[in-house]
Image (cartoon, rainbow, N blue to C red):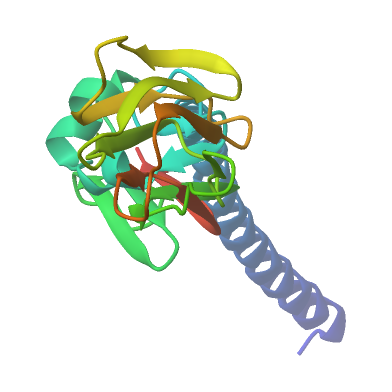
Length: 228
């Protein structure tokens, strides 16, 4: 036996095994790197669409907003896959899901993973309130909450004539012969509204009924997910 020759052969075997192992490791590394690069190619595209779609959803002139970053609850309630595709074409060709709070409000395609963009928004809901003011003191009433319109119902008693209605000093209704019946008066939702009534005679409670439409806002998280 030749110890040197045996040692050399053993070294060659060890070197071969090491090269084989290195080749295998390199192969795995290349596969992982390729997968990572594929993900890197995909994620920015998903993110661009998700950001663009979320921008459009909260835009001041968007179809589901009352103003910038304030979603109209009624408009959001009617948003579905069809409306999402027609009103927000930026998501065309992608699987898209839109969630508001803990519920999905619209989804197109099959979203299983994808890239998500989150935004904190306000959700505005219109409510209805009624008021029968006591106008016997000064013929005026201030609405307790802001609104963009007021339904005024005038039913003065016999012998009393309402000739003018003002909103914050601005004449909104006028008839020298007398006002009676129901009419909707637009007002500014950016300021508190005081309505005053010019009348010949007294206006006891029940002569005027008001219906107005204040809004309530709640904070929520809007999540847009795009799965390319």
